[in-house]
Length: 131
Image (cartoon, rainbow, N blue to C red):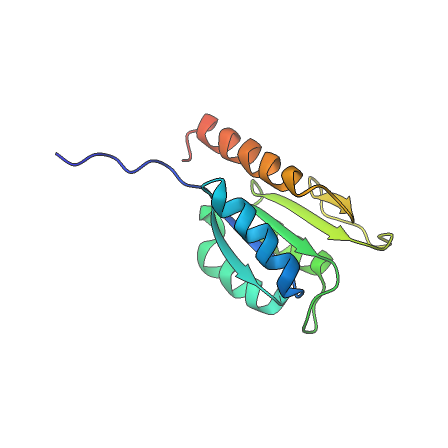
C-alpha cells in the first residue's frame, strides 16, 4: 500500500513584470506551494477554466499585459471558485469595485504577506476537508 501524497496548495500568480512574478513564485515555492504563473489575465482565465477548483490563492496585479485588467480577472476567478483566496494589488489607488471577499493590497507590500495568506488559505481548505 503506497503512502498518501501530502497535500500541496496551488497558487495562481498573475503579474506582467517578470522580476516581481519570479520573486513571488520563488517565495511561494520555497514555502512548498505549487505555482502557476501568467503574465496576462487572458492566460490566467484559461488556467481558471481548467483548474480553478484546485487553486487556493490567486494574486493578480491590476495592470496586466493584454486587454483585461486584474479587477476583471478577480470577478472571473470568483465565478470559477468562490472559495479561493483572491488578492488584487496595485501601486495606484483602486477606483473599481472588487467582488465580495477579494482583498486589495496597495504596493509595496511585504512578500511574507503572500506566504502567510497562502498558508491561511491552505489551512482553511484542509479544515473544510477539501485538501
